Amino acid sequence: MISSTILLTGATGLIGHHLVPALLEAGHRVRALHRPGSDTSYLPKNHEALELVQGDILDIFTLEEAMLG
Image 1 (cartoon, rainbow, N blue to C red):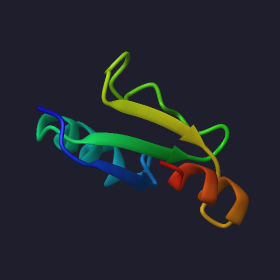
Image 2: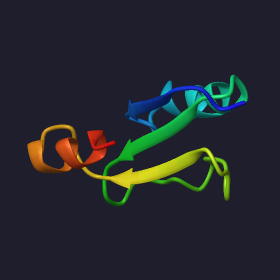
Image 3: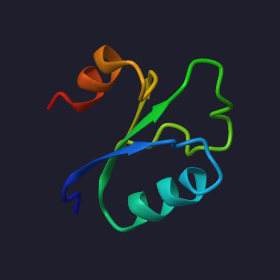
C-alpha cells in the first residue's frame, strides 16, 4: 500500500540516500530532489514509487515544480 507522497530534498546527500529506501519500504511515494550532476547511482532503480526530480532548493522555479501534485 502506497500512502503519501514525500518531497525529499537532498536525496543524494548523506542522510537522504539512506532515507529514500526507508521511506519506500514504509510504503510512501518519494519525489527525490537532486542537483544536476549529483550521483544518483545508489538510489533504487525502476521503483514505481520513486520519482527523481532534478533541481536546486535555492531555485524557486525548480522547487515549485518539484512540489506540484
